[in-house]
Picture 1 (cartoon, rainbow, N blue to C red):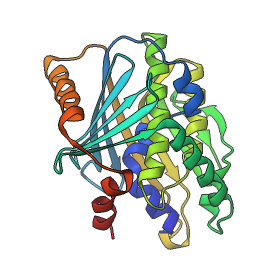
Picture 2 (cartoon, helix red, strand yellow):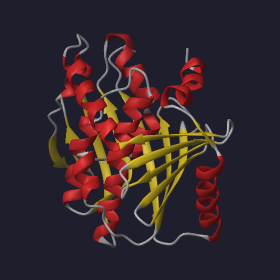
Picture 3 (tube, one colour):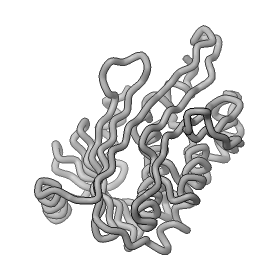
Length: 266
């Protein structure tokens, strides 16, 4: 498997959970949506177990993204255009402005376009053809990758808009957190189409074209997303705990927050 495919596999969770558009434009006019929750699970065809599980809770123009492993909470505050990352094991937190994410991914596009790896170059400026399968799945086809998405109409248009805001920020953040990550622009294109029609993703498949190292076999990554329009009492308790951690956890720099994560991946 090429280095770019390996990087993409490492970023499966955020990559498949998100489906997006432009961060600053999206955050400038936050949607007003009812409270809702999304349970997400990501898996690969060569694994019997999910590679990632998360619970995302939406309330008051904020999204609380709780990752099962590692024990990390990411809070997206769309009104203040800031993101907070909380590490429960170390009891530390860091913050990031939305503008910094946009600047980083713009630079990432430029670097990826100069790479010799075909997949990275494609991801820098992806061109996807939109169609539908016979079974009703939306299909976004490109030369080196294809998305298949089973979607449903959101019960509230603002719900789809707010989920898109979260997806935008999450996709961009993932590319910044993961060294060697794929640029998020193919997902941005797909998410623009979903949001245009007020749709929410129920199932997502990402199909990567095979290469010589994979014996020509494609790599398929899948995610499932279960939406509910009501928060539980346990959900509200988790939100309260995260808000308390924002006050009590030690604030550290972005570099210090990421240092042990990057060292563990070496």
